[in-house]
Amino acid sequence: MSSDMLTIVIFGATGDLAKKKLFPALYELMYGCPDAPLLPTPTRIVGYGRAQMALEAFLEKQCQNVFGARRDEFLQRITYVQGQYDKELDFARLNQQLLALEDKYTPTKASATSGRLFFLSVPPTIFGQVCEMVKLHACNDAGFNRVIIEKPFGRDSRSFASLNDVTSRLFREEQIFRIDHYLAKEKVLNLVAFRFANQLYEPLWNRDHIEHVQIIFKENFGTAGRGGYFDGFGIIRDIMQNHLLQVLLWLAMEPPSRLNAEGIAAEKLKLLKSMHTLKMQDCFLGQYTASTSEPGYLDDSSVPSGSLCPTYAAVALKVENERWSGVPFLLRAGKALDERLAEVRITFKKQCYNALMPGEPNELVLRIQPDEGIYLKCINKQPGWQQDKVAPVELKMNYQQAFPGTYVAGAYERMLLNAARGDQALFVGSEELVEAWRIFTPLLDEIDQLKPSPVLYPFGSKWPAGLEQFAFRHGVDLCPAQAPVARAIPSPLRALACPVLRTPLKPEKSSPSSGEKLSKRDAESVPTPPRKWRKLKSHDTF
Image (cartoon, rainbow, N blue to C red; front, side, top):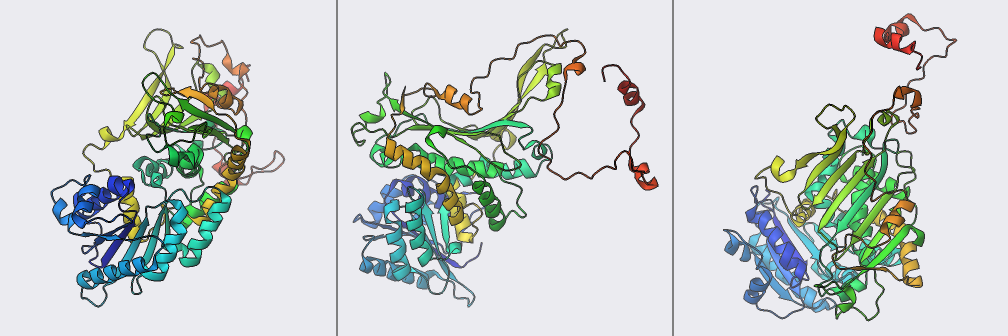
């Protein structure tokens, strides 16, 4: 790694995100992972927070999740600055600290540079304020300055526009890194290789072969004391408008011209622009109640009494483009359910030739967490005398079994590394967010104005009652009946009427009409049908 100086400033350094994710991730990048160091050798970390704390107390509290043989070395690279987020003098003092570190640790070679990376682990209500102070008092004149902003990026189209006006006025788009850590999860990253490195899947990735797509997020715990914060946003803003929508974009976008930030952003934006805005009829809402052993949402003392904030939501998204028109995308997310799970389920359409044998539709499952892997449900003949006795089986690829002993980087490790390198491919652009909020804001406005009562479900439920009917109305069967095992009917070819594909992925050459005469060269290029096929065509079934 380059020996140039890098200073990472964490605003909100006394908070949970810094303690649980950021400091452990930085240790791995600098010392812990097999390829370390991945950040410049003289990297220094400066924590900034409101709390008055001695450095030793700060390190003991905030670095308790940092483990490794070189932990003491890592701690020596961290300093702490106490200050307010709206005080110019405090930011001027921060800048003096940064200059002192850069003077001390920047290499002496003439080509050495010193960059600053500012991570805003603070409430979104003060993003603009912190950006103002950084621009006025804490930017580096000699090297780069980059700002990492953690979601949520506003509450709706209007609040995002206000936030974006501030940040874009102060920093160029290439300096702003809007983080959605789901984009750095290994299984989400694998969507690119899964689709574009294989020959099998992409030809089937369209409305002629896919019946519907589900993107599912389940947590087996409630708000756990965060209810007051959560109540201000709800499950749609917290999970669906960002994490799940981003998974959909990587899953359904057209192949980009190049796998760089510009190429990926262009295709994601095209896909977003082809999506309908959501309304109340496209949405299902729920809220968890107490079970015999767990409290309900309203039992959280930080939640306002009588709150109607949804802790579960499902939305049916429609994409109007040549590839996906007519395919429902069902996004569903909830807290206090029966398991912790995130996955994509792709159900394929049964084709006319499937009438030859009984069976269920094929289903492809991309498991994001836990037990990351790929699962394909197929129909297989059961061993025995009956040719038409079949059963569903699974073809499985489990990450831990396929890549034993491989180091899997955490999402924040990858995000911090890419931001340090200036690579924006895994970050969210402002144009994307404009379109994402366009899709969700009308629905969120309806919910805020009408205050619909969510369907109540006990802590630990699989899903709220009524979800099956909602999904079925939008073309998704959550509980498909087991296909009966029956003998194939005689002469099934008589009953088959295979539809022509509606979505040609490649333009086909036009064949000459019956009145045209083929040239000698063209005639030679037309394959002669096999003798058996010529004989079969004369059979009375055709």
